Length: 378
Ligand code: KG4
Image 1 (spheres, rainbow, N blue to C red):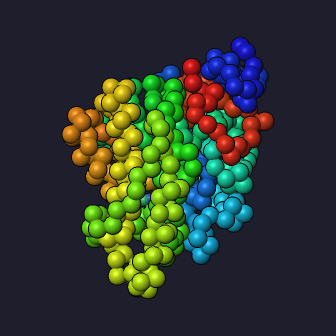
Image 2: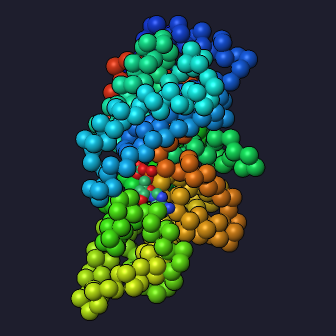
């Protein structure tokens, strides 16, 4: 058996077997897993949600999230406050996740945690907790890239829902990312397009701030857009090459437009709130889906998924279904609770990593930047 450091960017076979005590533990674990499904505790603390989940195989037994309200008053996530809130929440959240799943901590086979990407101070809390818990319980740990988690959330069991077939494309749209990912296998992913500046979620939140909404404004734009006319106010689409995106220009054009209109009528925003939200949402949704359609055509891929916080947007969900019908796609949309940051997606990624023996060791540390492809790709 080889002994590898999880930090090294090596092939799975090298990375598979960790410190000597874990190597023995892994062999024992494999034996004990022969006739039963793996039980994994997932921990997610990359931004402002503290989440813990228990999964058995690909079934979620519990998925508990404590959201932090404190940031609303500041118009965005304050990293230091997020980190402190994670410290306060992490033990009670894990406790509730174990209770809800009716699982004793001794029954857990491994602990999967978000190593990155995200806010370093937030990630450190989940990472430290996972390492301490693992050490105390003598369990292996699995360091998960959250961006894999968003994609692999599609493999969580859901009644009446098909799982994507390989290869498929996943549009991952969150507050920090906008990516088109080509997925060839569970852990074999390639980013084929991404934003060159703001993410789609940031575009929603920044536009919402201009309209006077608290953070995060994305869901509020969604709510008001349902009542508005998307054709009343239109905003320009960026001209960006390939499958890449840009959203910084949209924010500027909304800002100038609102400044111009409120100079003429100071109540312009209040009087047109629903139509403004509908116009902004329609613009962002058309931009993200336009590139997705282009990529699907060029690669001749018919299995198309969405993931990340913005995939909770009702306009995006409806537009994807409509486009899917026209283009003859099989579309995959996650359940709301698996769209935003959640530990179930980290646990299921942990399951696929465990299947390949991809464990970390106690020297692993959180990292704010963690691109795809990572060390997991073949
Ligand atoms: O994936 P996520 O929970 O966290 C990270 O960004 O890491 O995504 C959060 C983002 C925020 O920008 C939020 O405004 C956006 O997702 N979001 C939405 C909706 N729900 C969440 N944006 C538009 N419509 C929604 N319904």
